[in-house]
Length: 165
Image 1 (cartoon, rainbow, N blue to C red):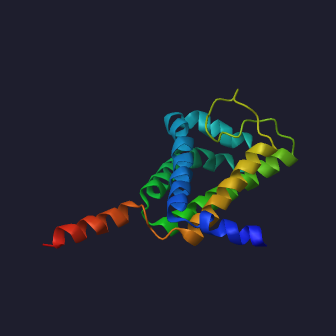
Image 2: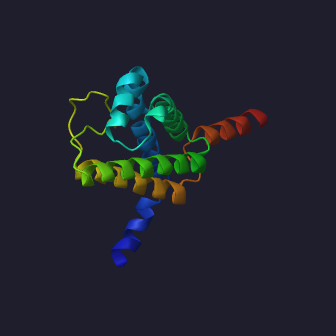
């Protein structure tokens, strides 16, 4: 219990939390790039999970990467932090469920997390573990990020300096 109390100030430090927020946002941005450039290959990756009806796969393949890049960008900038953290949690939860069921079913597929290349490294428990780690970052951001080191805070500070004589 004492180790948790001694770690709490470090885990809740505004700069550490801001760095986690930027890191989580960057994960989403990087994850979206190849998917945006290769929607057809991403649609194939989604279909490989055998979860969604074929009729919605293409729509998801087009919309999901744009949601990832938007959510990631807004997290990096520190805009609507709590809302974007919830979106990130939702996406990570869906990804965790998809990965878990694929692992349980023994599907030998690439997760499609950062590349649409079908020859990419196959999913393992590590893939799922990374999702859990990112979810835990989101928990820390949700609890401790009060907007310090964000675009919103910067604009408030600048506005205050301009208004002052």
